[in-house]
Length: 141
Image (cartoon, rainbow, N blue to C red; front, side, top):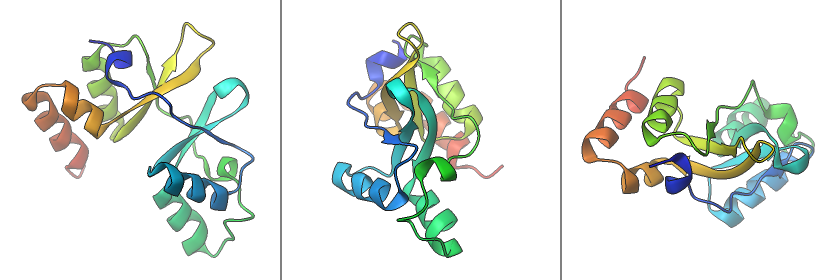
């Protein structure tokens, strides 16, 4: 089984120039806690979470209507190739301690094609694999 077999499609990006209040509105509308940040051609440039908006913007006294998603994005986003094996997906998520992993189609101009979440894993991997994943992600360093 490959990443493309377990990912969910229809992932929406927030443009890097979009404000955080708009990102929060889209999260509410989509009922998600994270949005990929994309540049031209659905090229992944970062990730933003509802927690990022609260802690790095609002709690720091910044106005979410004036701060952009791109300003809040940090570092190179973690992702997996759509053709990667599910074991590689688990390894990447465990190694990077992430609960959601963007899926990129390396063969198609490196476009964002989906997202893998904990619930996608729970539906598609063995009980032993999900138990190992949970223990590695949720156990403090």
